[in-house]
Image (cartoon, rainbow, N blue to C red):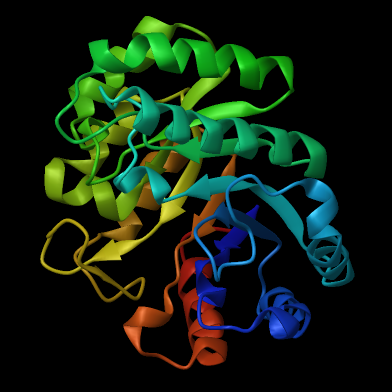
Length: 265
């Protein structure tokens, strides 16, 4: 399934979301990934599914499928924090994501498995705990390779996935995030069988966190598509699209989908 992250709605007023969700579907996307973020974003930490009835109805009316949930709140509140209060807040966010995903039919949640200065051994106890909770609720736990976590390092993330040793824990492979830290072919080959979702993102000159519209950066998408086909990847691919790129969002939704179609069905 080809979807798009709800980041594309960052500059959109809540009352306009129903119209934009229909635009997303008409542009060729089948799914949408939701995010828990700080206010004024409408999906905030601690929110209950009952408070999202308006959004779930709008998604249904737009013929979109909720693929899962993610967050960037762990940039400042890593789940491996040594401060009990900070870690407690970080874990509550994940528990909230699990509950919401279970309630709305999301297959998985994607999280950063720890802070930038942590290591896989620091994360193992808490990831094991979170995996148990997620698994009991029918939600897969995906660990994303992000620039603000030790998971940017392929070997660190690999060691963590192997140590958890449960098929319910996999990874969300962010292509743009992987590029500055090594050979993407190696990432795909190493995590074959563990990739639960691919984030389609592109970066400028291989620099972490310097994103650009897909197809205009340094990612070789023909190679990515070839490698994913080689490992028989058949899960979700989700485009990361941000208003900060300064494009007309309706046009960029269509342009990006047309570009992706060259490489992904």
